[in-house]
Image (cartoon, rainbow, N blue to C red; front, side, top):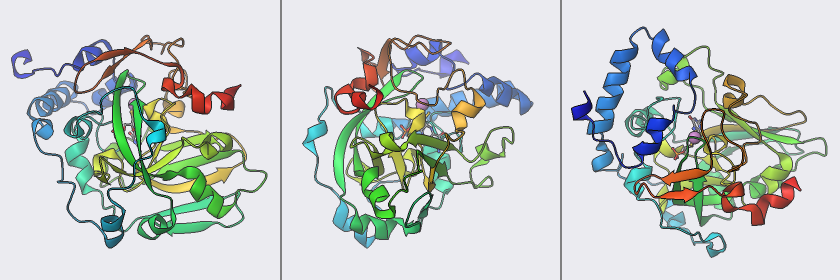
Length: 323
Ligand SMILES: Nc1nc2c(c(=O)[nH]1)N[C@H]1C(S)=C(S)[C@@H](COP(=O)(O)O)O[C@H]1N2
Ligand SMILES: [Mo]
């Protein structure tokens, strides 16, 4: 079947690297039709809408609030050292395991998720627990645009403009109690919409966590938009975390709950493969993944290779957290 597949340039890295986790081999095996599944996802890769349209067209279906918000003012403080990734490339090469372990499928499969209306509960060790409707919440948050780089643990990277607000602005609203040490975040659980969640041995729903200090850092961003419009579903609509100095798996998508807790929470990838996916997961070229080096990264779309930077280049903002 190799004649059907024309690998995109950035695939060079993927070929050397097993995706996010080896356990996937087991997943395919358990399905009892490993080859068939692999074959169909390769086909999808070759014929995906990645060559053309963004799925769905981003301008449609804006709420009244969104019409006012976009485009949000750019915060130039976080200007970066390379050209932004092409929007269509970013929207057609996604990790969203709720829908698929393939990179091209989420752009189609994630469209099944109903994201309007959407509520996020902020609970746990806080003085004012509250459930926020996203649309109303946005009216009260300091929404801006920031250009950030994102580095996946698999070695691909992108640079995109996110629209959103600092997580700190939301946490200040609920007022963390003195005993709160970690911020745990949980994605939706809808196994009949997101068929990846039927893999019962995986610790669904997807969870991630930061220390409270990390969560309050100025760089820690809650994104509701990308490229000047609301997030397409494959990017984690309607609200996702962006922590650009950590490997991409920390940047949890489609959040429904934010909980302040005392003890370090279990998280999705750390639970599945703790030796490969560290809880802290700060980008660090000196610490190899057990199965590959982290010294180099590759931009999706252009295939450009760059040296991995400590803290993904954001040490100036976050290094003090770890001093
Ligand atoms: N809920 C959820 N969040 C997730 C993931 C996921 O599978 N499910 N994948 C993570 C990984 S591994 C990466 S690299 C980024 C990718 O974000 P993007 O698809 O918007 O580029 O999302 C992260 N957030
Ligand atoms: Mo990732």
